[in-house]
Length: 341
Image: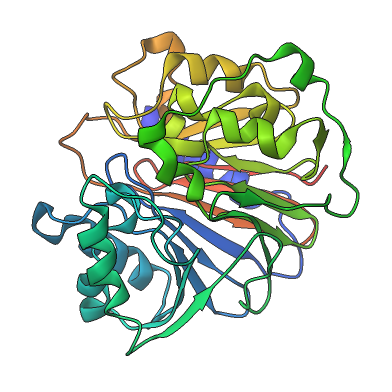
């Protein structure tokens, strides 16, 4: 009986509130077990892959990326953005390029940190520059993907130096939220390329692994970003990276969390998100074993619920120019429509 209900719900939601133009921006939140991997397909047909998850695991994350790209009808990745050079984001670029064509590599520039094997990872990655077009970006730049606007909000430890149009209002959360000093060993996280995706009236922010201390640097005393529809939760939903000065100031309708079973999905982060003005739902790639039932969303909003032994389901977001969007759970087939506001 439950499956019938879900099927009826899916059909009902899919046929309600969608843009008549039929043009949409598609986003796949790919399960890479607590790493990061986002595939964005513009209405123009061009694609952007934002990080690659982990290397190793017998090519697990590369296979998952290729499967999502093929499901999206792609024959190549037009732009591969490596947000920063940590293991769980950088993945295995040579393996991906050998498995699926990549046209352009985008990063924040040369490695500036050390430790955790970063130098060797970067060396292997930089060896690809001779055969693939390579672009270094800085805060304030636009990525050249056709059909959507992609603005670089943060890169190489810096952030936009003036508000975006319509933004720049004082952020009252700065006065009530204590800062957390950044740990030296986490410096690479704050080198992250953070992106704002805009398609008509729809806006989605993803700052990769930007942490609490740098949220303050970006968002205080004034909010230079403004409000968004979707917040891709920073640093997998770990407490060290989700400050109210960002997570609550955005007034996002939906938070999408790329957590793993035991990485991210922290109860404190869940509480921060739930308290955000205007938030309607939290969606997660995994049920979090770090939290109890009260600190996980309902299972219909979770792609993978089996812990570490799952089937790598993704969450798919489809947005239209009028600001409406849908999110589909590939595990259940349930889709929810968020009408334009």
